[in-house]
Image (cartoon, rainbow, N blue to C red; front, side):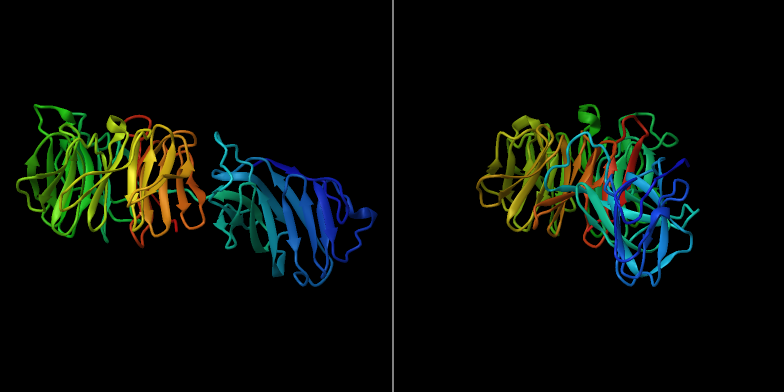
Length: 459
């Protein structure tokens, strides 16, 4: 790792930046090119670099005159979003934590915006070690991160990477979860891919592990999942092929017995409750309701567009019509008239709902919006590039952006602020935020067998 030492003047302006000290008188010998120093005593002091790096030593942190060395490390660590610094001398500790302000200098393809910041943390490792751990204090803005430490070492601002639960899958898309497993559908890995490249499997994996289990035999183009206590339901797409009929199917969690509930149209989406399963048909452009164990499906809504994304509350089903209609809808589970919540949208995709609002993401214009369930004007929550999936947990709305920085965001609806959780995600299609668990999303990958299922510890 290449190092560059800063020339620092203690207690006066110059070199890396400016320094103000509480009571130490550095004198003429404070300037050193080979051992840059910041002199401080029991009264504390502040060092400020030209690039924004700041060290604030509070009164009482050291008991006597102390000299700190400061080095800048040019080779950025993976995940770093700003410069890296090494403070010395080795073994130096402080009776009170010192405050570090680390500049965030990551160059984004798109500006973050006034109310958007990176989920950056301060990381620290002892001198000479690569055992980096995040520091506890975490105050981040678009330009800097403020953190604290009680010892010297190597410090940088960085983003916590998402954990990979499954990798090298062919275009994983659908997600569902219960208290034990995360379920997903994909075209398999290179070693297990079916002969028909449109076929795939339903998998499950326990959060925190990478032990993936296939629950089904190869099935035509599985593309949507919903899970209840006993079964996993999925949309068996048939790739819109009349020779291979599309169907709604399910697999028993215990016996792994597969069952076809109905063959119909071109099933794109599925959700359910304690008595019924609801699904969207992209061929007939209908929303259907059917008993959990199968039976004759009932049309809840016609002219529904391409209902690839569904949401629900106790009384209603909500969906987006995609580019087919560019509308957002709702219909009562008991049946009745369809309500258009929003129209003239830009390819609406992911959708979520709470007690007051419907939320949706537009792939075409990159906006994330909300509108009152009872009707009314829409409000822009976030402007991205090409927004896809949405998931709601409490007052936090999670979204995926498939263009620009290929990012995943958490929108705090109470404060109207956004934190970017991850960058460089390769086509994050669907996202899931179960209560009390991690946030999960699918990365489709740029090419076949590059897909991932990832998890992230988020509020």
